[in-house]
Amino acid sequence: LDIARRTFGPDARACWVVLLAYFLSAEVLVNAMTSFSMTAHLALNLAWLAAFLRGGKLWNTVAIAVGFVAIGLHQLVFHPFFVAPFLMWKWRSGERRLVAPYAAAYAAMCLWWACYPMLVSPLVASQGATASHANFISQRVAPLQLLHDPRAVPLTIVNLLRFFAWQNLLLVPLLIAAVPVAVRERGLARALLLGVILWTVFLAVVLPEQGRGWGYRYLDGYEGSFALLAGYGYRELEQRIGGKADGMAVLLSGLTLLVAIPVLFATTYRLVQPHLAMQRLIAAQPTLFVLIDDDPTASPDDRWTDSALDHVRNMPDLSNRPLRFSAADLNPPLLAALCRRGAVTLITVADMHRVGFIENVPVHRPKFDALVGAAEHQVPHCFRPAMMPVGQARASVE
Image (cartoon, rainbow, N blue to C red; front, side):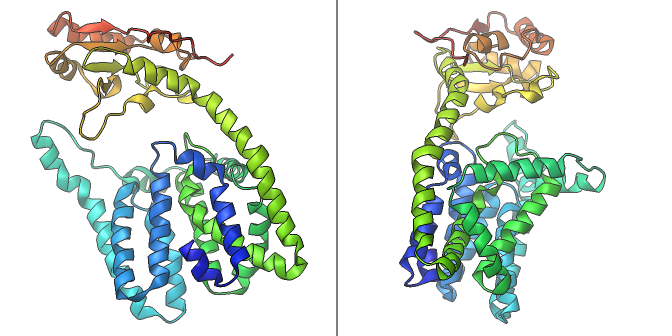
């Protein structure tokens, strides 16, 4: 709201359109209910933009501090890509004394977070664990020098169609109306649109497949940009068609609220029921530890299904019970060491099938059986079969 007021001033209707485009986005609402970091990216991007537009020493310092958190939140490049068009806008506007400190700060912050895994690895190793040196650059960008995904363009088109299907129906016509404004003006509108375009192209080349998500989750951090562009589009349409722009905004927002969002929420609810059943299955186990058969290499069909790895989630302070462990990340000595600390319940694919989860994955899992057998040989009577939750009905959707 602060950004909208600062952008559109006394034009209250444009501000209301920005809020309608943002708050009636099913993607924003549903992703906020997940463990994805995308909602945090969205919040930090908007906090950064609000501070950046306010300007002055205090708010520029706040923006850089927000940027430090945002870069370390997830993958290294997500937040700097959002920031770059706004710095380019100020640079072209002649405010180079403003841009230089930002450029220096972001270079230092990116270097810090790029080196962070290597810096903490010795500390983590001293505690008997391991830390990965990999990051977005080494995992995604570097392989581009050798590989190219032929599905990039089709996947990107599908991703964008999915994104707009999860937005306020008002967004598409207003976004179309905002494009001439962004082309015509060199201000905020162009920076917003340029940011969306650059990030989408980057994703198409580097990360065309989003995996799981609602809408297109990798664009979730730009929901604020789309909402602000909708405000520009509304103002442009209002100048051309007058009061009809208000009628269109009310009609399409009403259809979104009364039809589109309920349909999307209903399909979401239906889709997550097996996951909810899986969660209840794990939570019902009386042992301190559970071992989940989530090895994605055990079956060639797994890559087309939901993954049990989604349920290997523990609280940061490990206060949850039972603690969840991934079979894919353990070897027999580590599993045996876990057994010496207490009994372990096995969550097998057969157990998952009983609650309607990943039903097209074969029950026969030789790798999992070999892991459990080797640990059982070292620590007999360690493992327990899974107990079905009381009153648990089969959760598969017929």
